[in-house]
Image 1 (cartoon, rainbow, N blue to C red):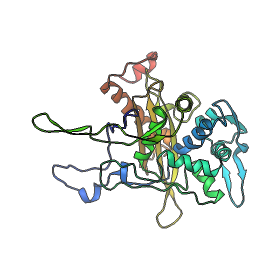
Image 2: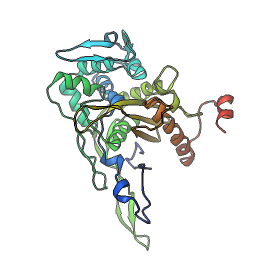
Image 3: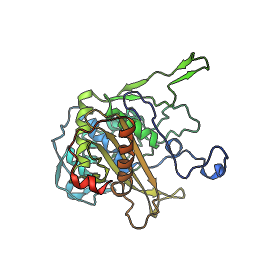
Length: 327
């Protein structure tokens, strides 16, 4: 997605079908990008972090208490695989700390948090001109346990397109834009029948807060972050990983099924595109189904080809080892 215009540059689902023959259309005709709803996991942590920054409650370097990996609420707990005492706001995103994200959410308060969740476009259709779009779910139940889980990606459901729009807020100037797949309709004689101009839905973040978030998301891809495999030689990139247990429609969660995702942008100093990769129940037994291991490398490959297609010029030195390993 182009964060400056809302144009969808590419959209794909797998498995798919051949439109020329329509074979397997019944089984594979589902447009995952706009029709599926899933719990986004840690990719949603941008909401509490960006909201707190935008409200002037924190800066990227503000220390956030992360409860050493265990927060006891009323009838619920928040844990983390990688416990930490305190992290900066940037560190919360870089390490994908659940307790840190909830701490930022508590600073905002549940009312403002859910307002930001709505302002980022979650819980409602984007209005893209494609049939069958899902709205997802982002509702304030008034339950603190649901609030805690919403801060790190559960108790909320989204579509990949909604996530792309939300990350485009950060990649752009802080404004949420309506996504569109047609720029204009042109008759055979060259007459423009209809134009689809870029459309701003509303302002979500101040431009300065969006810029700070971009730099914070860059730390996620640098050494020490959860998405080092999303790096693209020659470019500065940024983004966020996400990993969740897959929800069972019959109740609870599947024990051995996960949804791994990565939402990123490039180049970080002036993003030309946002790319969201979602892997639903990875079938590769040799790789753990985590966003940083499964989805991030796919982003890297897509971003490399997109950079060539868009004629983006590298700004960073490319190490010889990387060149030799990636012919």
